[in-house]
Length: 234
Image 1: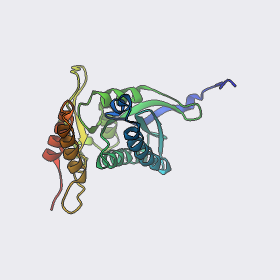
Image 2: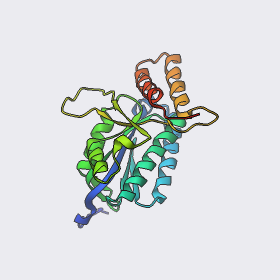
Image 3: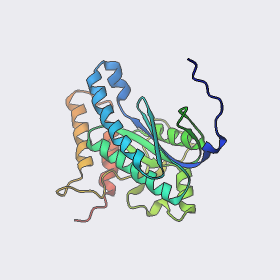
Image 4: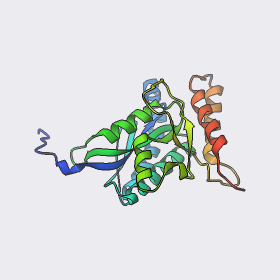
C-alpha cells in the first residue's frame, strides 16, 4: 500500500535548537563485516539517546550512524534541555568507548515525526560543523553562539565549554573554526579521574596496539584540548 503524504503542516517549520551527532568509525565497522562490533555500540547509543525523549522540550530522531536532538520551540528552557542532553550524550558514549562528533545550531528547522521529514538551515549548519571536525568532540556553531548571546546566556561564560581552534578535516576559510567546544568530562571526576579522558587515551592506545595509527590524531586532538581546559578543583 502506498504511504501517501497528504499534507505537511507549515507550523512544524520554526526556530529551534538542533544538535547533530555522527558516530565515528561506524562505516568502517560495517564494511569490515564485524557486525557484532557494529550492533553492540549502536544499541548502547540508541538506548542512551532514547532517554532524551522523556525530557521536556526535547525530541529525537536517528538513522544509520546519525543522531539528532532538537527542541520543540526556541525558548530558553529548550536551549537548556537540548544543550544539557547533548553534553550528556557525548560524555556517556565516550565513556562507553563510542567515539562521536557533533554540533549544536539554532534556526529554522522543519520537524514532522509522523512522516519522518526533517530539514532546515539549522540542521544543515549543525551537520556541516559536525562533519568538519577531525576529532572526538562537540561544538557550538555560529548561529547557536549568536542566539545564546541574545538570550543572555553567552557561550564564553559556559563553564563546560572553551573556545578552541577546532581541528578540521579540510580547510574552509569561509567558515569560523574557532568555536566553543565541550570540555568532555572536564568538570566531572570519579576518584579524582576524568573517566572520559581515560577512555579517550585507551582508545588511542588500542589503535596503536592494533597497528592502525591512521585515526590516532583524532584522539590526540581531543586529549590535548581537554587537558588544556579541564576546570576541576581538587
